[in-house]
Image (cartoon, rainbow, N blue to C red):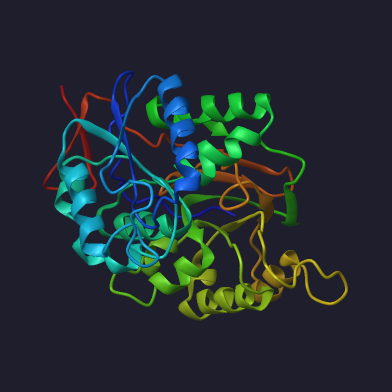
Length: 349
């Protein structure tokens, strides 16, 4: 099954050795216990060849309720990073519960003028989806500082860390398509088939909630798309409900395929015979929609994360358990954004 043509994308400029990457608190605070994770992230990024700076709000112990700061302060710091030409990428320190509070405060014109990779998942899914909807920006649904580079990466086998480091470096610097993502034995074919389309998704609860706001992804963006999602916490019945929301929205009637992440801490999925499996929940809601479904793929809270660049065209073969990035996530340095076309790309002669 094949999806429709991709919209024009707003790709960030490829990073170069020595470029400045900033780690920022885009949602939750940094507990003192996780300062070491940020330090480890700096080591990983410097090993990739980048300079690293910590944004001011990323100060251990500072917080406002469940956030690193009030939403307006987080937005102001993010906007400053978006406007600073020296900053070439922004990495979230962690997820949380704050991005909904400042979606209306982000300087989208700064993004259109100088698009930059924003890396993160969980609550950062909101930024990827809302900014992709408004500007065409490629969203880097990928590891963050505390639970990713400084967390799960540090406990992963050395061969896996090396594989991921190479993959992330290519994602940020390579203007050619990466191709097949490294598969693992955990991947499962829940419904066979093949699809090709733009990759759109994130945490399932954020996808569902975002569609109730003015920042919703237009339904036509899901035409032929490969929907990816994962979830952490809550109940198995919540996942079923979020999928029903997407069914009622018409999203499930538009997509060409689905990729499901490894579930984490979802009550009701660990009681064989007493409740459905995640695959059974997905297939129940899909009904007779004949689209390929690949399950238990390593992205999201179960980390370390495989990067899932929002908006990039992918190829999915559920039976063969393959997922391939068919386009680059970044643009060459000799390409510039055409201001008359918010997501168009032109090359210098």
